[in-house]
Length: 325
Length: 289
Image (cartoon, rainbow over all chains, first blue to last red; front, top):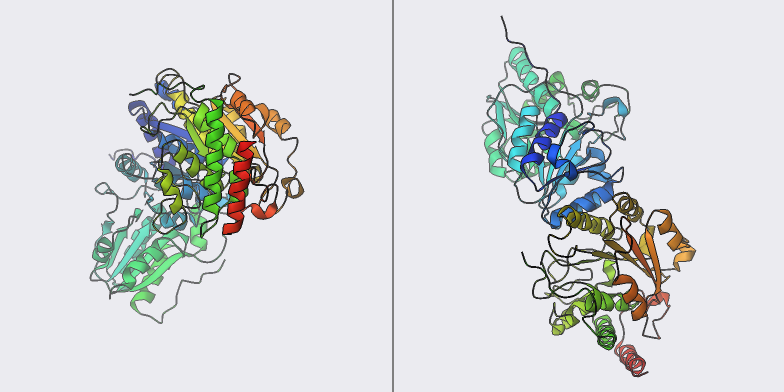
């Protein structure tokens, strides 16, 4: 008889439950909301006066967070990734990052997680925007367990932290030791091609691609989950790709500015493997579909990743880089 | 935890505040006569507001600029940095001799204020940020409970009138009302001119007081160059429990320097030596009268 398998928990709900518990034991923590609905019905207990819903006004939201952090509080700010990274970007840049204030940005609906809600609610630029900000830590947990582990470590970290969360539950990643901020995590050993993946579904699909490559091509693929986009340690990335002839980055993000760009910048300064960057091309994903279906449509699938790995290993084969939609 | 012992008002005589304001105007002219020039018009328009705040209203101590019991001042119209630097220098946060370095290589006196300058709470310059920061600081004080640090801190945020065209200001206006942030005081330097035009030509904003009232704010309208009126409004805040307050200070852009008063081209200017000398003379004559 097998033990019942618990249904996976959405990263945003793992975050919510973690934060509510943390508010009770850390009197510095303030939860600033913007009518996200994430905390509807939440029981903050004695910390109830440290939950504040400031309404649908993200510039004010982040400015208030900066004022509070400047005065010694530890604000967790809640909005969707698209609004944190674009609408409120200047507030994050000037009022938070410039002052190196310890504001924690909990950004739900990262990547294509908003699914059928469309490009207005997709965030395919957030990692690029947040990576560009000095002093910012940028974290992308792969599942609920990652979320809790990274939050525990980020809580007392200096400066601002951006945490990209999802919307609906995504499958848990295979069991592994807890992630450590800044250290890419090897998810599968391999020797010929290194698949660097960021986020829940890209990591799952990279793992599936590794199976495809092994079974269909006899290619040994290493899979490394990059949950910390900033700081991204050059030596760690060099170590992660060492020995491989090719590298494929896989992310739920526009191809510009995210994991692929970060890795390209690091690898450009040293001799090493060929690099293929997989992401969403220069387009808006304007179609009805679940997060999974939209990723399928832009080619970020196990088969697509395997194809990218083949083309990186053997230049001249078909390239998945310019998928159109 | 220390508590500032200085009283909220009445520390300085009216004559002393007038004298400080006069010296601040001379400093502003000097800085605009430097190589980089400066925001002359909008700095001169808020000198009296800054003088009354720093010499008669704010509980601040240059020896303890981070004292948790201090009142907060934020220059949301950060382009008036030179007026703030001059005020901080006169109030003892800076050596007045440092003002000569404004805009020069190696100086910490940038065109918009930074936290490297003693007394500057948070950097500003991009318009539409100060009110949200101030709301955060006001809510912070409230959450720490009244009385714990002595009389609860007041947070003053000085805005430009053109700045109110930034939508983010109105996000904060609404949020301050809904959070009943009564210890937050906005001050609008209502000089009527923005960079290239009169505000009413670009985006009519009158009746400004009614607009704030409509959002649930308590409103005082004063002559922004009359220290008595400024003191009566700024020094008595908060006025109404549960309501944020705004002082709409009617001012003259370039006030005190006739060549700059109400002139569009005095928004940002580099004063030639001859013009600066004339400005100093005009300011001295004004003082004497």
